[in-house]
Image (cartoon, rainbow, N blue to C red; front, side, top):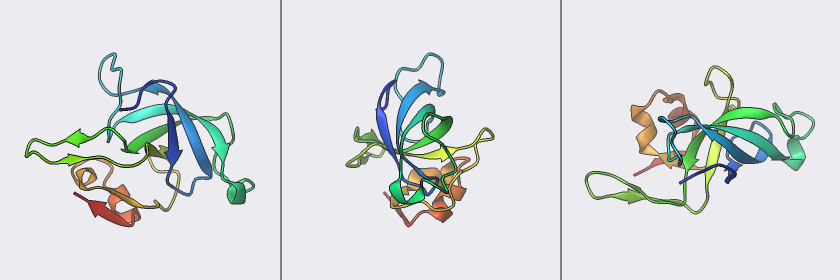
Length: 127
């Protein structure tokens, strides 16, 4: 469950390390964002090794897709899925990925969304 001013870690190689959520694009006047939702974020920190070749700058606004949340995502068959951190991947204006690699596993949920490319770039799928 992500809301305004929540911090998320970035799990792709776009160069950003931490971002802060500014706006949630899912639904009408939605207060929380869950796995699979698009949010507007501000870049807070950059990765030390990628500062010179980063695709984003500190303080820049970008869209992000929420990949993992600490709050459990409950499915209709009784399963639930939660992670240890809140994380996202950065998107450009046309909702395409900024990075070329995704670190760690992602939920199998993304196979049935319009972000199918994320499944091929990640290390693996879970649940």
